[in-house]
Amino acid sequence: MPTSVHFRTVAAIAALLATACASAVSTAPSRTSPVETRLNASGEEIVVRTNTERKALGLPALARNAALMNAAQLQADQMAALNTMAHDLPRAAYPSPSSRLDAVRYQMSASGENVAEGYPTPAAVVAGWMTSSGHRANIVSTKFTEMGAGMATAKNGRRFYAQVFGHPRFGT
Image (cartoon, rainbow, N blue to C red; front, side):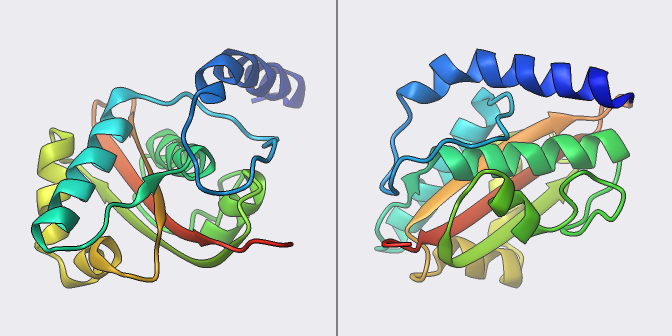
């Protein structure tokens, strides 16, 4: 994609999300992010279902964080565009979890990421993560206080999901 088209696309997405993100709830200090993505209902449902799983285990809910929602959606979009599920995507604009957190200006003291592909619904992907020891460990970790999630569909119809966890670093 030519740079000018990419820039206009990012600028248009940022303008559309300015209104949507204005009412977002976050426990982290407000920061303006240079990267805004389209958020969707699937990401919101993943946050709710993740907190339902935590509540069932007697754990506190994770706060929905706008920057983490953007980081997760960014990763889901990148995986769908490349039709590749991975934490690290060398051919993507934001190839690593840390580069995505930097892009949304989330300063953290701890972070984690779950990714998945092929699940038909947010309920199915959360259930899948809960049966995987590594993914479940992120979901039930007490070192995280916030989260975000996103879903994107590849051109072939395959769904890609990302879930990003964090604990903000204050005073920086």
